Length: 256
Image 1 (cartoon, rainbow, N blue to C red):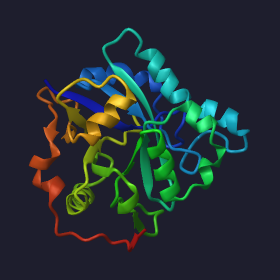
Image 2 (image 1 turned 180 degrees about the vertical axis):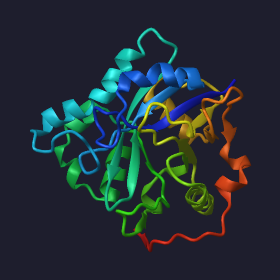
Image 3 (image 1 turned 135 degrees about the vertical axis):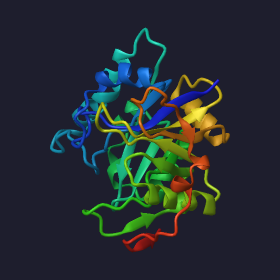
Image 4 (image 1 turned 90 degrees about the vertical axis):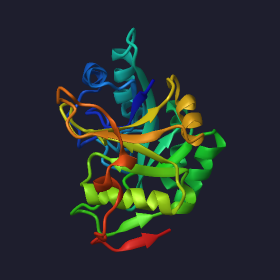
């Protein structure tokens, strides 16, 4: 049996670029066929909607509301809601899994961590750090920043990006022997082009997710139209448009 998890999701409670209340995701995701989702709102140094002038404890409390609202809405349902964050540096963003609200409350200095320091601190508590959409290009970005030595893997598919950028991400993962995740980077409830990470068994906790990912048991999957009557998730590895391209990035690539 296949269990599919959304690993990259934004809510109106935590991300300035999302218009989706966390609670509204549950029924929609279950209908599409997901077994669960990980809320990864933009952190303090990214496109958060939480006021940055708040005291740290108050900021963290508000930042976690998207996850908490989704968790409450999923009570009594066969659907798993987990917590993560999306941390930004110079436009390069990292999905952090395995930490929780208390970890954040205890570490206001997290805002000053270098990439290596963040990686090491996450590892200390058994978490993992994946680079999100490594070859993403946007008008507000001046370069592509890659840090292959301080990640546990990378996003091999991100439904928020065009096929050729996903193919570059997939090739990057193969070139570095990375374990790869798939995710939608979803910001809006009715998005149709979606991704996820498929496992052959159920994931109940974020520790389960970390263990399963590190074991290599997850594979990136996608669906072009989640609302189609015959919609189903397919392995990214079997789609040439998402795995192979001769197109080069237009932005300069900076290695860390």
